[in-house]
Amino acid sequence: MSDQRTPTQTLDAVVVGAGFAGLYMLHRLRQLGFSARVIEAGSGAGGTWFWNRYPGARVDIESMQYSYQFSEELQQEWQWSERYAPQAELLAYINHVVERFDLARDIQFNTRVISAVFDEADSRWQVTTDGNDRFNARFCIMATGCLSAANKPDIKGIDSFKGPTYHTGEWPHDGVDFTGKRVGIIGTGSSAIQAIPEIARQAAHLTVFQRTPTFSVPARNAPLDPEYVKSVKQNYAALRKTAKQQFVAFDTKANEKAATDMSAEEIKVELERRWEMGGLNFYGGFADLLVNQHTNDMVADFVREKIAQKVKNPATAALLTPKVIFACKRLCADTDYFETYNRDNVLLVDISTTPIAEIASEGLTVADKAYAFDALVFATGFDAMTGSLNKIDIRGSGGNTLKDKWSAGPRTYLGLCSAGFPNLFTISGPGSPSVFTNMVTSIEQHVEYIGDIIAYMGKQKLSTIDATQEAEDAWVDHVNEVAGGTLVNSCSSWYLGANIPGKQRVFMPYIGGFPPYVEKCNEVAKNGYEGFALK
Image (cartoon, rainbow, N blue to C red; front, side):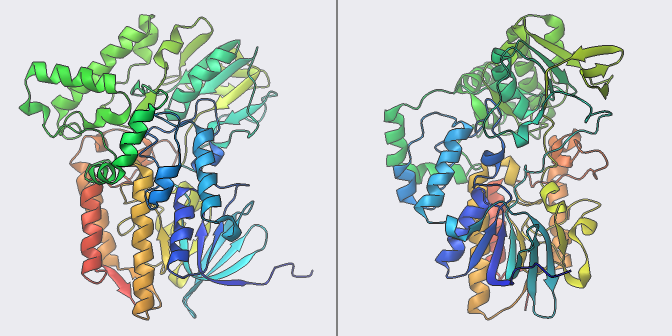
């Protein structure tokens, strides 16, 4: 059999993924004078916003903050139309960035990386794709995203349904028409909360299968006021500075007081103010929200009361009311989610104690009751933070695989590197603030930090960088210690991988806040990249 492999391409860096992270990484590497190639599985750039095209998909951070800040010209020229941009507009923005900075010429689309193997003899990464492309690169940078590996449920008979099935994370690009259809949707997480109101308006009937209810607050989405846009653009630098000083890396108009330092009346006023502000501004209501049980209970009860007011049927309202702590999972922001259950064509089915028994050709069964559908939607989330990396055969020093190393939970230093895998970087990886922040801001910080490391190595004529085992162990301990000091670690969520059967329960993101994380990174750099072995 003849070898159909293409000639190996030699580069300074291979970047995997063409979302916000991969695109900026490519741009930064070019600025620093390095050759790079981005490998992207999709037919276009966009990452999350390329794949997640389900009805109602939109960002949960305000558009004017969920955007790049590395280019002032880009900030000034792009015009957002809504407070929370819809998926199509976010994708248009990303494509504008690709065109504006001429990025497409160094992106290879419709290509999936299947292996990345570190060659210890020449200290370079050998990267192979599903199309038999081979790359020899000094650095391998994983920009694969935290929420990109769709979690498809393991339900008996899932392939026997004769109608179409859809996953919110892999939605058809030409859309889906549910007019006149009987639709079943499994899941009530963030994607479902956005999709359910839209599908309900179109379908003849929608049945929602819920295992765990989710806290959600009104987004208060609206067209952007031109005067507001003008004001932000005139003061963008100040807004960005304020955002970076906040725990979540976006401006929530944070209240620096703990609820314990406020009167009952002040607390009531603040809760109502946050409710009216809408969106994830709720995170900024009280400084002790994630560490004080009484404060958290008070906020949770406030939202529970709002749910009861919105949903007319008391039994349905009770099912939709979370029993866990507030912010157990990332808070959702919705438009008429709870109100949707007041519609005559929407039914909620509880599968928390009696799960779906089987999917058959006509629909599915819960307990002894059969539900017939024309279409099924799986809003079952993602194998967060590690799923996309585990799909690639990544082998470091000694031929050890990253998947094996992380089998008991991911281990990194600063969320950037994992000991034993020289010159391999993960952008917004486990052990970084990532999903607890404005992802674009966290991504930019990571990209710039990685760029600085690579430039430093060039100046110092160094060939490899690897996290030391000691530094990695200390950082993992710190991540766990910080998580253990909050209420968030006390509940079951995708932050711990609890949504994936068999996945080790380990708290994956760093919940210490964006400013302390940046301070730590800067301290490491100032001390000659302390905690890294540079050779």
